[in-house]
Image (cartoon, rainbow over all chains, first blue to last red; front, side, top):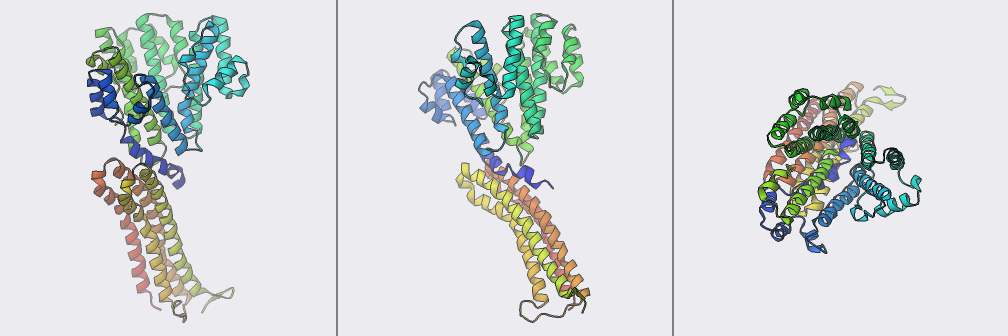
Length: 336
Length: 163
């Protein structure tokens, strides 16, 4: 009987269950959306869990700083809750990869992109910077080191900054999937596989829409999903109806059907992208059914990431005077 | 009286039964209370006001240990170990007492663990929907049924054994 496996997480789950209550629910999000100005929206935020951050922020209008701070707080909490687990690391890898991309591009374009660095990853941004500068690659995790080497080689061959993204995205997917399966986080692995599928679906739709060519699509497809890249490539040449048909036996049937219908009507892929994100959120909600175990913790972190993304969409929209209806169009479903 | 390796076998079996009832029930309860206690600590860390309701839920898986102890104690009384004047227990009676202890020993062990898990899950209800706390109490209490049935069977059996 596996008593220990799930009950290891009992304390963490207890805390998460209370913290979930503090996630912004539909009503609060609605109020935030309906705010007439940035100031009013900030006032709404001050009534939520973000109150402290808004009050303490040197510049409350800098929503990126506030939300980054919140995300960091969540990761620190997960570290504290599960000190012996690599679970928090799974979420941090993407920030390191982002920093690596930024720094490599800055290196090749001889520009300073330091303001784009995010200091939330496993390795401090400064360390990554000095490591890359002094070419001391072996002092960062092996996978990063190999990713950077591959990215450099690819760039020098093709002289296109996009290949840096492609190579490092692959590094990220492979690394996260590997860690998730090693840690026995089956739920997270399933979420990731679906995420890769949906990213590939979005790439396919985008490349088709822009008519960028099949080679371009081949480069952007990621491995590691439930659908192999070879499922997507032949669809480049087919028409949209055939694409819908091809997905009719996958779990993404509804996403593709509605997304493509909206595209054919409006010429925009925003609906498809939104439906893809909502699909993931629906999967994430399964975590509510797990009483004990790592699932609620994983779901909380992802719900927070989603919430922060929504807050950014709203606040940046408000700042730029985007109409409320248009903002609402872009928002993703929330976890609670 | 049968003696194995110089040990009085009947009395030995009776004591073994009593010991099993106490320690298996105790293991079930300690694991159950342990799981529920960890979850309760997590909830209280974030929301100390819920302590009262959680305490009740944490205590629920604790009963199996008490039932086990009760049965063990009953056997000790029955064989007269407590008064300093132990009865003579034949090997037949010893086996009977031993077997009579098994229902609570095993139902206590298993139901204690599972009740702990259900209690922890129910604490999630208290954390998220305090208004449904009453319902949260009923769910782990269902598991209690089977510990009680085990206790009942053990006590009926012990009472029925003639010494």
